[in-house]
Image 1 (cartoon, rainbow, N blue to C red):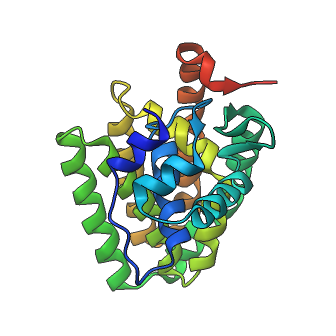
Image 2 (image 1 turned 180 degrees about the horizontal axis):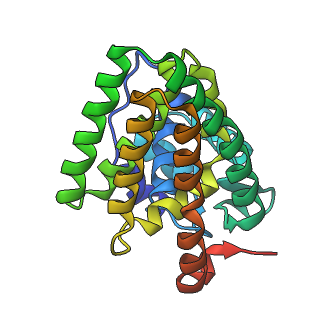
Amino acid sequence: MNSAKAANAAMTIDRRVPVTVQVHALLRQRILRLQLKPGEALSEKELSVQLGVSRTPVREAFIRLSEEGLVDIFPQRGTLVSPIRMDEIKEAQFLRDILETAIVRRAAQNIDVASLLQIEANLQRQKISLQQKDYSEFMELDEEFHRLLCQSISLPRAWRVIQAVKGQLDRVRFMGLPQPGHADLMVQQHGAIYDAIRSGDAEQAEAEMRTHLQAIWGSVELMTSDNAEFFETY
């Protein structure tokens, strides 16, 4: 799908919200969902026409995506969706392990009833989306699950830090969802994290989160074999 088609299928610009924020969110989602694939060219002109915006917010969105490692900007060649880089996946996983295990440990010690109810409702929606094989919705609910954990201990900026570093990782995560049993395992692991937090067991919550985060490596190994053209491994 070229950038024009991607935008055409996308959204109506809300003039009450900063345009750059909306363009960035649209392109980021499509890159993470592999609707815009590694190596695909993005046209600043085409996107601005399709979205009905000037080229400035598109250019600014490209810069933000470049900072996240999701696009590469070449002065002579233009802007391309970046390959999935293994070194960035490893770094993102390292940072997630440090932050998210600490987050669930604190949540097990401090979470309130309202937050537990929000997380429980999220888990129920995850199961429904999985039954419907709606992997895009499931990915959004997965994101919400981890965001709610940060929110439950009043650390919303921690989630923004995590989001900023894990774009490369998210593409592999989305690619792996249709693998037989993989999404089911994720739901089970989310449930185990929730149960440990609800019971106040900080050690178990940390262990369950670490197990959950490490499960990605099975997908990475399989995806690099099946979709080698998407990856940059050196």
